[in-house]
Image 1 (cartoon, one colour):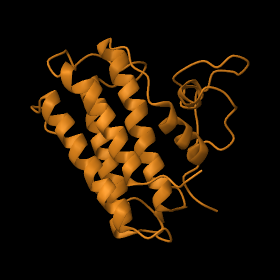
Image 2 (cartoon, one colour; image 1 turned 30 degrees about the vertical axis):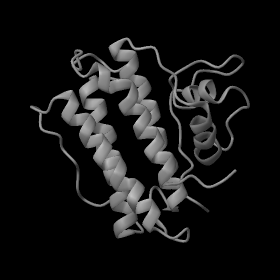
Image 3 (cartoon, one colour; image 1 turned 180 degrees about the vertical axis):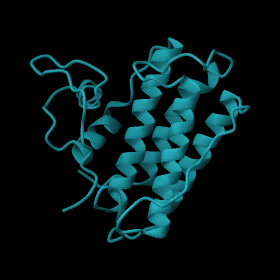
Length: 191
């Protein structure tokens, strides 16, 4: 399987925008799926993480995350938060394009650009799932992106439908024959 890259991040973010933008006027104060966060807070979290991944690639720290956080203003509308997600997704995509495959930055160990791309796609897809659950929107993440995330971040995941397996791997669904997942470790770092 090819290494994940900025195009995958762009497509995941575009899918998030496609499904959520028509629902900007909904009550984003609702709980996002099974999370304790609201839909609004969950979307702001996606922006935060995408920017954090871009920052890691830019600074290339080898022992920790940079000591900064993106904080969305409480007065920001869902539309503005989604624009922030789109902007942070573009920043990550740009950093991925500018990073050589040999680049390493810290995410619980040395992580290559492909690992950061997979992390960004996973955050975007899984939290879009949470938000759509909270807003009552029927949606499933693209199976080909789920398959790529599973290959990179969950190499020991069971075989099966990639959407169902990724939802199960991140504690968001059941998988016949397997106990429910309550905690998980993303295998982004390379050995």
